[in-house]
Length: 282
Image (cartoon, rainbow, N blue to C red):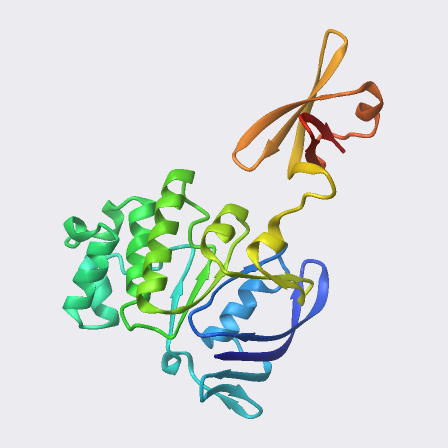
């Protein structure tokens, strides 16, 4: 059980805000932290990792990591951290990167086998693809069998197919090691596939704490689907107007009326939804 009750003043692009989080996270949960950029997600991870201090209390099982006048150093916390930039030692091979964290060669071999990296164990990081580097980073984070695995948008730089593959491997490792995992992500499909709980932060405050389905599904009433996207262009074809909208990795075309065009601006965020079989944009 992780008990978090912390406060920290942050200075961002929108001025000063207070990170104020009070949560309890059960052992073995996979929790996704979501919310707009600058809402405090990465800072919360860094506080958990012991990379930043804060006011309040942080307890993991019977161990106190943070309390008034007490701060447990990062190296004494049983955590694994997976960054966006891999943070691998460039002059160490794949296997040496893992053994630097823990000399357990059997565990290293097991992790490399699960993540299909066995054949690459003697390669240097600069010879690997982005997906392979991230798998090495994930394996190294698990070498000490941490109580808590922290991941800060670990797959954001990868293509869709590689992200899906690594998501499956992350879930496999999470279940096998029974690790409590806390992941920052902006990807709805990633959150839905991996997490059993979503905490949404906004301006340093928890505004939602629910299941992925409750947090991510945005349909209302009789809507069959509802997606957020960016309006890229409006093209006039004969007597009709067609809006080009970017949704995730795809572009969609929506027929819009002359009246709707008057209220739309290129670059704005729009909601694309449908009732029955006729898409509408608003």
